[in-house]
Image (cartoon, one colour):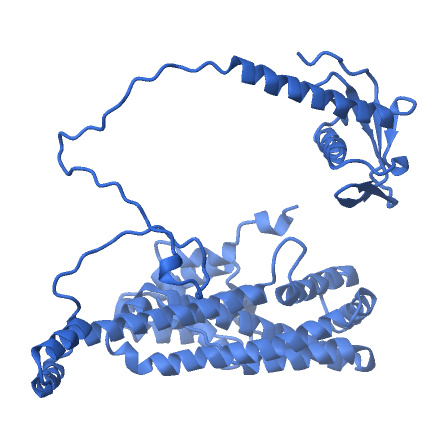
Length: 499
């Protein structure tokens, strides 16, 4: 269910997309810088003096500043407080000398804008193995020693775990996205990339080694702790937050649900869920694919560089080699080895019937190829043949099928007692009968009524309790089949006529 706060409009972001955004953003940015320098309150005179130093605000008036400040207060970007420290007269009080302060929403919005400007148009990130070591230490402290830690130390360990996990995931995702970006792939296709290929591959391989080493230990920590212990630790953290956060409207259950959801997300990232593999395996696969892609690029560049390399020295060496030979026959043999046969014929042969290396060439069966003329007017001759009637053979096959079906149905009839077949009480049956019974069960499970009609006219209904854990063994000529305890109710007799 969507939370009510998600549906509300965020008025604090309105100043980012308005007609006078350039004025609003300048004011907010100045107030934000003062806030970051621990100067909480800012006076209008400071703002006005700062803006007038820029050429864009040469015609900016104090009345316009007052209007902009009031508008930002309405959008909850600034909060105003009246200055009462130096009030000497009632008139001074009536003038309402105000000082302004950035709201928490606005501070976070400006921080986000600062981070976005640092990111630029490309991904960054890194793959550092030390991040997994920090994660392993935090998870071990949280789960193995969490009950022995004080509430304050446990809360700090939890904060460290969330911070290291978020940093690791974000850096790994950004770095792999950077490697897969179009600009980086274009750089990989240049000859200068060969110089950095070994360092780049070594960097990724070191990350893979650290990933495998630490991830196995992290998985072991998760697996040796049960759900009860995890719940107690998260409950202790939630209780600590409730006692030391003033002015919060959240309950202990709200904190518990929030932290438990974060913990399960971290756990599933390493161990995976029921219907999907872990994100750790995905990261492993993407890193391996990146190494393979870099290797392929480097191989292609090396082959291209080799193709354009001058072969002058090679040909001089070969020429001297030919010069040292004593006869033309030896020169012809060397030429065939180096450059191939002068007159070459290509032959087609069928694949070998055996993969054994011990079979001699003489033992291989010859491949017979029919040669046809290579002319457009060539057509294969066709002979008219009389149609052969196979009525007698068809009747024989049909009669044999009917006899087999009658014998098969008689075997099924012997298994029916009191209009039902109890699979638990069946004797050893043939493979054909077993396939028939399991086929009926499969078809019944596909129907809501659990009832079907067979080709021979039987009405078969499956009797089975979904909640039962009891199993039976169905024995047949081709083995034993374990399945839940079931019965097949036969509510109509089969038809005797198969014609």
